[in-house]
Length: 113
Length: 115
Image (cartoon, rainbow over all chains, first blue to last red; front, side, top):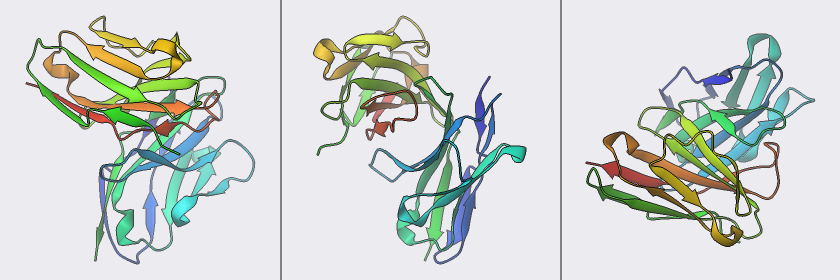
């Protein structure tokens, strides 16, 4: 069965520091991979997605993610965090030909001024 | 263009009562999804509509949950009677096409607390 693991429930970083949020997935083939962010009072917003091709994917708000097949990982990174990045981040996978996402449990990011 | 909207934003009810959640998708989106997040857990798929037809309701917990999408526009999710374990955040999403490579746009969720 497909599953997604986000091992860090909470992460705290200082403003201006770099950020890496971890995501590991379990799936028999290469799935479609997504990162969503939910800011307080908002819906989930798509940051980026990976289907195939270049394993380094650029997204909105200065985020990027790298697909590593050998490690079954799709970690999210940002070189310099801004206070407005404080939110909850969700990694998700989708099987080709299906309509539903499988989400991880989320990582809540706190940014210190 | 308006995003996905959900009503109410919060609902607190007693065990055994009925609650109806509403979702208005982005105009023109034929695909509508319901997901649920129980506190501390992952967001889980409940069901998928294409227009007014249920395509996949494999994630619906039990027959206390009833989803409808009359006329292929807005959708409602009714819980009757509500139980304590139904507490959580209910998200609605919509997409223009499918499958998963089409971006799903999510609403802010309805926070349901069953006492």
